[in-house]
Amino acid sequence: MEQHTYSHSLLQELVQNIFLQMGCSPDDATQAANVLVSADLRGIDSHGVARLNGYVRLMDLKRLNPSPSIKIVHETPSTAVVDGDAGLGLVVAPKAMEIAIQKATQAGTGWVAIRNSNHFGIAGYHSMLALPHNMIGFAMTNAGPLVAPTFSKDKLLGTNPIAVAIPALEEPPFVLDMATTTAAYGKLEILQRKSLPTPTGWVQNGNGEPVTDAHAVKNGGALLPLGGDREHGSHKGYGLGAWVDIFSGVLSGANYGPWVPPFATAGFMSSAEQLVGAGTGHFVGAMRIDAFRPAEEFKQHMDNWIRAFRKATPVDGQDRVLIPGDPERILEAERRQNGIPILPIVVDSLRELAKRFNVTWNLD
Image 1 (cartoon, rainbow, N blue to C red):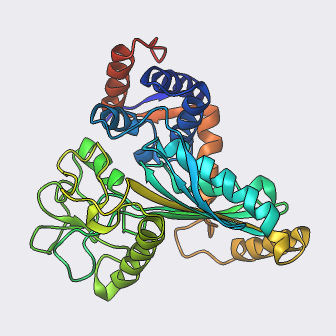
Image 2: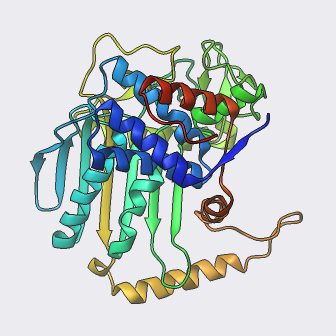
């Protein structure tokens, strides 16, 4: 399928203007656009500007408040619970991360549980906010139930991503950003647009049988936890997803498990009739490195760790061993210079949104 390439600055301007017309403040519109365009720059196209129409649909469904009053509802010196007032997770999570960083500055670590939010984009963006502060950043979120636990036919968990960002001295930071499923649902949406099957181990049908149909989840099936099946360790992916759900939902007072509201692009899903909390939940944290050892000393050893792994002998057919964060960092440098490829169906969606909100279309 032919793709068109656009500069990140033009995409940023377009998306930011649409968020403004949705009712976001200038700062919030800029922040929300930053998160989406950052996903595209880093090659996580499933969570980039292709998701913009989903946030608009959330607003249309009156599940999204474009001008929320985000506030702390409970706190200790090192922890807080934040209510997002049904705002964009793209805005709520960075503000919660600011609180975590502030608390870590004073107490050594800061941990913030968030309720009453919405989809927050890529987890890695939020964890990386800690890096300039000589801190290690964490971010995770629960999501609408698309995932069947090991041995289950029922969908009870979301893709529930988790991210950690760790600074180094001379080497690029270590950034792990992963779903706790074999693949995020957005990857299925990309395959659906391209009319391609999934790899084995991504999905099962309604009878719990492994299939490669990219539409299986829409047709009563489910995504599979990381590992795909019990023999390949899916119980570990199930456990990781459950951990994220408990920290993001049960701990914060958000919805959890089968009660988490679906993102608007999952049109085949419906919200639970009775909820157990408020909106979608996230959990973020920051740890000051010098709460454990001198920051420069730690970062020197991170350089040493990274270089040791880079020197590992690659298997046949591979150029080198990668560090978590390498593929995204390499692709970001390339896309900043050469532009971001966008599928025609996504371009059409952006054009329709620009027309709806009377925003100048500047991508042709």
